[in-house]
Length: 117
Image 1 (tube, helix red, strand yellow):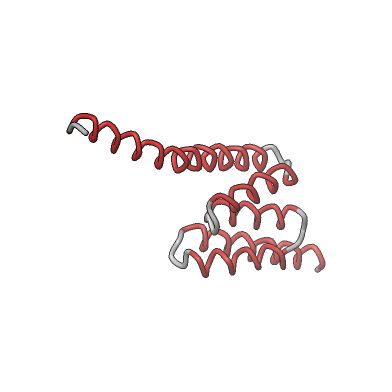
Image 2 (image 1 turned 90 degrees about the vertical axis):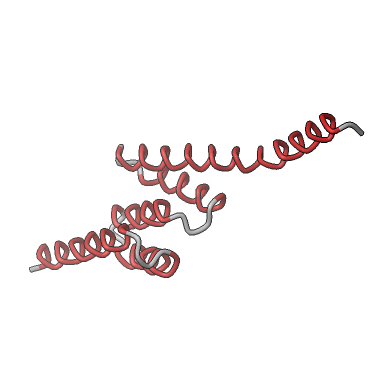
């Protein structure tokens, strides 16, 4: 086999192996945008679907965990939000979304306590 033919074969093999990775990245980006869109529209159910699909492609994706926690908070389920916070904290301890989620949950709990008072 000639050198140009070997080079073409190797490049073709590399391209075929990287195609599924590129597809997964495009799908993850689209799901991230969908989750953010539906959450901004106040549709937690559709946002949750997008976040769960995103986690199937990229497990422990911080934005998806944060989005699921926000959906739990929208449904007035702080314990569910706290479970996602713990998962986010374990998988990405220094991520900025950890601190943001901690604040969001604390505000939600304080707000609930003020309403009871």
